[in-house]
Image (cartoon, rainbow, N blue to C red; front, side, top):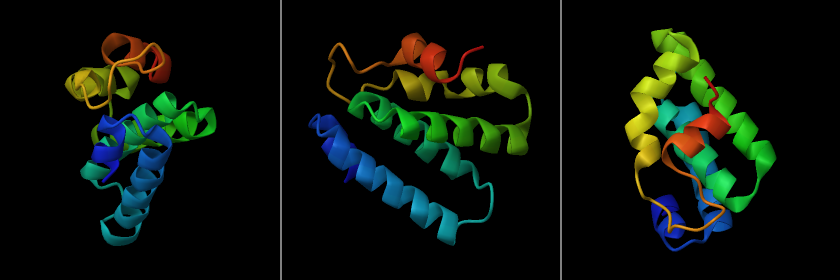
Length: 110
């Protein structure tokens, strides 16, 4: 449902769904499960599109922290591994929706 709302440009509704996905992951998956990283990344991108900067910071931080706990390598390795995911066109293009290098640079500065 989060992807559907995002694809329709309903980012506030999508953000609520991403948050529910993350609650489910925290309650039902092992601690630091790798799939949580992808959820945090998409949550951060959605929050950016919705202009919810507190959520952007929190999800960005948790994505990087979880990745670093599991794989190490800091922000550079994270950016390398998640560059393709950040490039996905899951949201309709607009001036306020970032993707690719612009999103990586804003959310996970090298």
